[in-house]
Structures are given as structure tokens and as C-alpha cells.
Length: 286
Image 1 (cartoon, rainbow, N blue to C red):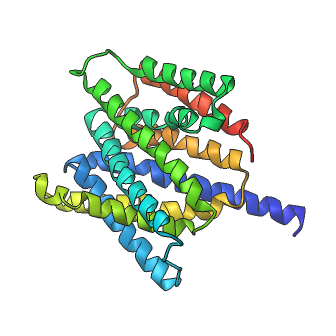
Image 2: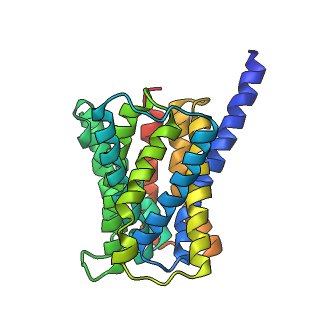
């Protein structure tokens, strides 16, 4: 393959990555139009996405069995963590704003630093502390009565659970297709969240069904498949930087469609968090 064609393929994959990340970032904005509780938004999301992934896997005749009982157990556990992750993410944006939800979500490298013992070193600890400083800048006041503060706490829970999922998926990624991993995890999350349909009272409007379906099909199943396919054709650091753009796209979309204007605190804190995220991506190993 010529250098020219390789360059063209790389550009194509970069564009596809940006499209996938844009789709990811739309979930928070669409979630603001949905008035049912966050846990039911998360439930609807994983039900829709897992059904679509199952259909695609059956059409493509993917191997859906896992290699060991250990893998089944870990996959199910990760699915439960995913249920907590999506519920806390939507709770964060419903309590505060899209900007707060996406900014705090971007702090997951902070948790990865301490969840991976082999990566604990002076530089990574310093990066984690700067990330934490970015979060502290964003907090308007240390009070549980402040909605922004509560939103940040929910966002940090979403960030922590995403870090746990990242480690688990790293273990599975070399052994199973991304689509298969996603199907098991989202299917498990759907089952784990199904009781919320009975336990949490809500009146679903047509716009709620449409919003949750869009989040599940477009922002999750299709976007994830597109992201996994495209990231194999670019450098790891490039994929990491583009992933970090999810926060930027989310804030821009919220500004356009929701008229949510970020505060100075959110912009400064977000700049600190994104700056460290970009720095880490640039200096990560391919």
C-alpha cells in the first residue's frame, strides 16, 4: 500500500472517529430533552443498543460464546458497573448541566492512575492531582444543597466506573471482538436496570421514547461500532485526543440546542482537565 493511500485511509479514519465522538457527545444533550428519571434513560439506552448489537452479531455470525467461566463472570460484573456508569452520568447532567456531566466524566484518567499500580509514578500522580484541581475549580461551593456540586459528585461516580470498565475492556479487547464485548456488557446492564421500570415511577411521553431510542441506537450501538472500527487505523495517541473532544462537542451542542452557557468556573476547570487529558494522550505509548 502506497504512502499516499495510507495517508488517505488515515484521514478517513480520523474523520470517522470524530463522527463517532460527536455521536457520543449528543447523548447528554438528547438526555436533557428526556424527562424520565436518569436510571430509566440508562435502561432504555442499553436495551436499544444491546438489541441492535445482537441483531448485527447474528447477521454477521459472530462467535458469541466466551472462553471460560471467569470471562463470563467478569463480563457480567462489568455490565453491572456499566449500569451504574450510565445511570450516574445521566443523573449528573439532569441534576446540573451537560457541561458539568461531560467535564467530570473526562477525569477518568485520575482513577486509572491509581487503579493501575504499575503506572503509579511521580509524573502520573502529578497529572492526577492537576485533574483533581480542575474538578475543584469547577465546584462552586462545597455544599450538598448546591445542584452543581451534586452533579459533579454524580459525574465523578460516572468517571470512576468508566475507569473500571476501561481496565476490564482492555483485558477483553485482545481476545474478543469489540461488538461481542459491548453486547455482553450492555445486555447485562439492561437486565440489571430492568427492575427500574417497576420500582421507579415515570410517565413516558412519545418524545421520551424517541430520545432514548436515539441515544441507544445512534449514540451507543452505531457510534461504538464506528469508533472501534476507525480507531484501529490511527495511532493510539490520536484516538485518545479525539476521544477527549467529546467534552468539547458536548458543550458546543448544549450551547446550540439547549442554550446552556458554561460558567467561567466550568470553562477554566474544563480547560485544565482537557489540557491534562490531551497531554497524557500525546505522551502515551502507541
